[in-house]
Amino acid sequence: MSSSELPSRRLAAALRDSINSGALAQGMKLPSERSLSDEHGVARNTAREAVRLLTEEGLVVAIHGKGVFVREKYRLARSPERLTRAARAAEKGAFLGDAETNQFTPTVEVEVRVEEADAETAVILGIDEGNEVLVRERVMSADGHPIQLATSRLPRTLTEGTAIEQADTGPGGSYARLEEAGHVLGHFSETVGARMPTPEEASLLQLTAGTPIIVVRRVAFDREGVVVEVNDMRLSGDRYELAYEFPAD
Image (cartoon, rainbow, N blue to C red):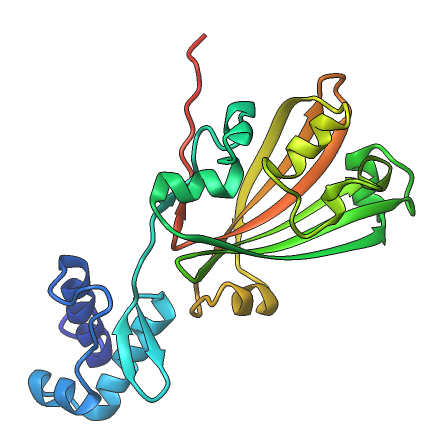
């Protein structure tokens, strides 16, 4: 470490090392600015700046009236069986499959609405721009912590009069209802990227400054190759990891 490095950055590095080593464990309260100042022989402004740097990194979080705490991290793996027909039959599809894999209690807030397809949605779903699509907005939480936002869009011709238009779609979810209606799923495609969240996304996911999100777009096809759903997911970048297996053949 350079001797010319700012004192606040040196202190932030020392605290970061303590967090990474577990000396400052997840959920532990950081010493006060006064204590950090006395212990490390720096001005209180220096201690305050060091804590600010760690907050921007997402390593610590300030809780009003209580102090600054080492942020608890969730490294959640997506269930590899989450989209299978067997998982849907056992009511363990998608997010419920993730919950079982990672041993957390899932909760989902759902908003359902109908809107006109914009140009991009129309192209993906193979419908005319302006046609009605059903939109299902979800905020998904693990043990009370929001970790994922998901926005599904389906042609209204497939959903009208079905439980897909209800907040609770029933056992197996929307995909099970589609298959009951004769739209047997054939395959899925996913594209994955990353970006910084919008202010609304950061608020809904309770992200600290500087935390990116993973963006996943999943398109569901029936056995005839017809697109039945496009789902745009935004995952908390510091809590999710994506793992994939591919055959060598």
